[in-house]
Image 1 (tube, rainbow, N blue to C red):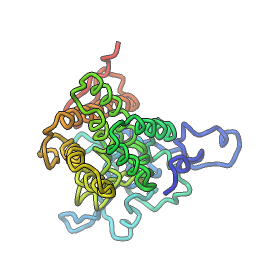
Image 2: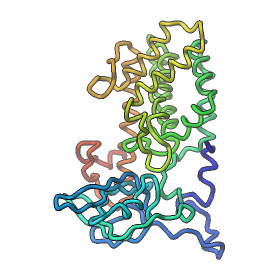
Image 3: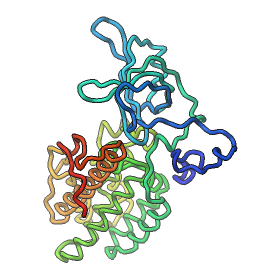
Image 4: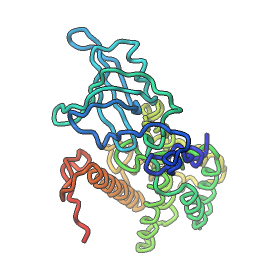
Length: 349
């Protein structure tokens, strides 16, 4: 797999981040993209979008239609293409780019796009950076911080296990390019590493304030709690769930992955194995939210709350930023399903 830096050379960066070479008379690049966050009801659209999901369905009258989701780095919008057929549906291949002509409409108080004509778009004519969100933190910076974090471990067993895990080229590569989620928080290239590093800082502080906690166990749990996301989510356009991810889920996948590396050490203490696997398996807090077991150690309780806090605060930050960028100058965001309501944006002095 290519390194993150090579995935976004100059010509693939978002339009507003690219240099002004084309404007000065250089080789013409792709046309400027109309971002989903800027769409309004009644707007006529003729542009290129990433197909995040699509299916061909049958209407009650027997005709067929396409139900799809278009995406770019600013969000998603549901799509309907009426009176479709198998040939039309071929242009809606998931994780490909479609050039669509249509109109934005309001349906049940939400925007959707009705497409009249569609065709596959040549990926070479697309600025990938307009469609795939990327962490604001440089990968090199996060890798350096992460490697320095591993050196702070004093427990020899957790330290050697973590070093062996992240010495695996495939694991390391996927860890630093994977999103932490496909929608709600840290949903961008490098989001998983960003989430882990942020939560590790909080965990280390909590452990310093409460020496009762096993610092190395807690921080190892933070590092590994979402490691299954590298197998559950595809880091390509759309951040779709893999078949493995849908069938098994990142919690169990993470436990299986860590168990595989632990088994490489014949003398790894069984108690330490059980403790670290417990943190991974219980980090969602309740069975209702997907954890096979509930937290029953102090470190597991701490992990659940601090990683949840990091995810939710980042989710709210992204919500506020996107709401403001959409042109809402009010003190409150629009209704958000994530927040189960509106969020007040002006709490900072």
